[in-house]
Length: 221
Image 1 (tube, rainbow, N blue to C red):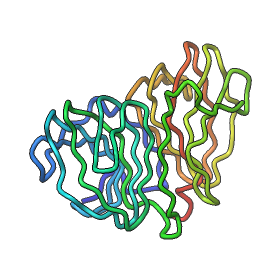
Image 2 (cartoon, one colour):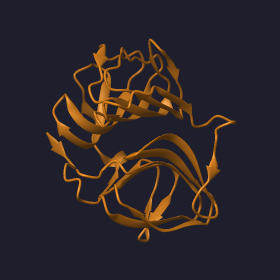
Image 3 (cartoon, rainbow, N blue to C red):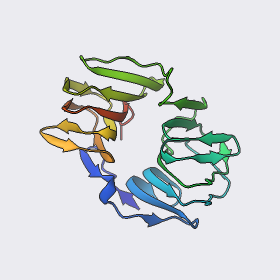
């Protein structure tokens, strides 16, 4: 299966308009943003777990990272509520489940073997380590940083403008709240944008926005 598998192309998708596709496990459905492979795949996905659903124990070849969008996602290592960012490195394993239901944004099989850090960051914590961004009214919350992968949440105040910037290794953006403007087009919550390596973009947020952001990871794809 191939979905948005041309990584040299700009992709802009409103995930809210995508159909839910059943997974092999009852109560677990997916909206597929990009995918290369079948059930074992390099994939970027919105996953919805119904209340009291679970997924069988599995090992993450190529790693897993996810951001909890709604509800509480759990495994034998803990409970992760809305705003939790988690990285499970290549070779790790778990048995995920939910009690009350949840929705998560997930990326599978996109880590280097040497990236062995377990990461657990509450992006909604009052003491979250926000930093000044590259423009007035823009702040960033670092989540993970490596030579070819930079993950953070970007917060745009109302009327913030981020001037055009280069993305030598490409960039990926999931709008979590508010609306992000690019080329006069507005992208609200659930919108997912993927820019190829070498792209250049400028953003603004007339009413403010919160955006999960990753750059540098698409070089060579």
